[in-house]
Amino acid sequence: MLELKGVTRKFGSNRAVKDVTLTIESGQLVGIIGRSGAGKSTLLRMINRLIDPSEGSISFNGVDVTRLRGAALRDWRRRSAMIFQQFNLVGRLDVLTNVLMGRVAHVSTARALAGFWPADDRAMALAALEQFDIPMLAAQRAETLSGGQQQRVAICRALVQEPDLVLADEPIASLDPRNTRIVMDALLRINKHYGITVICNLHDLDLAREYCGRLIGMSAGAVVFDGAPEALTADVARELYGLEADEVMDREQRIETRDAGLVAQAATA
Image 1: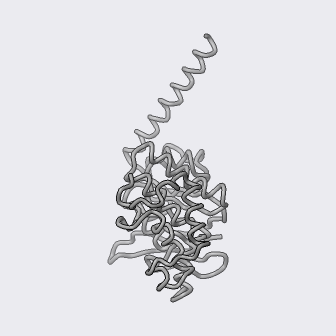
Image 2: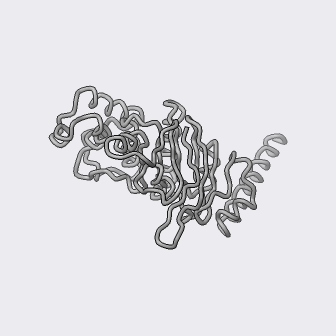
Image 3: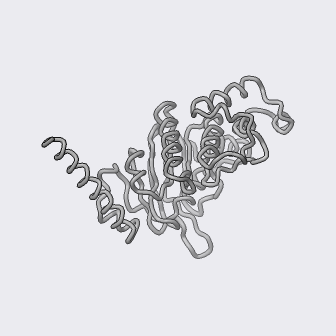
């Protein structure tokens, strides 16, 4: 269980995250929603300890993450795997090696730098690629892949870390609609098939509602909504997204109207 108590992050006089208190049970798929600048990325980076909170505490299964140092902190970062918007792959290296980078915490630095990966680690990396239908890319340079393929490689790298939770920071922001679906399906598979907690920052409200069992809405650094997707009202959506929310709600209403029309046509056919 992940617990945040009064977590705040200041950058100078600006409070990017304001007094966030949350409890996330193991095995959940949680979407953090809101506009750009709402504090979503800062929150995830504090959980992983890439950024330290200015105030408050973060704990996981009773261990105070904010107090970890040295080897214990490195182990926490392995257990809370990050997936980034820009993939963070080494373009000149092949796909298999990029995935194996997720095993760095399990082997010596010298072996990793020399590329002497244990056979078990190589088998695990290949199995991860197989899980996400890209084993044929193992020998290909990462820089030659499409954005969707690169993000799936990044997800495989996170998976071989053997994490307790996966933190995905806008993982679909730079992808086309087809690859967006492929990546979201991959995150859903990690959650459902492996039982790994996934916390995913998303700007797209429709996708968040479709894939996530719980939504946490942020605005100006504060949590303004926490609940099931169906509990997110139009008023709360407008607080989160401003004028953009009207477009989202209108699109959903058009879809509902279209579906109702199709049902009526089928009934009279």
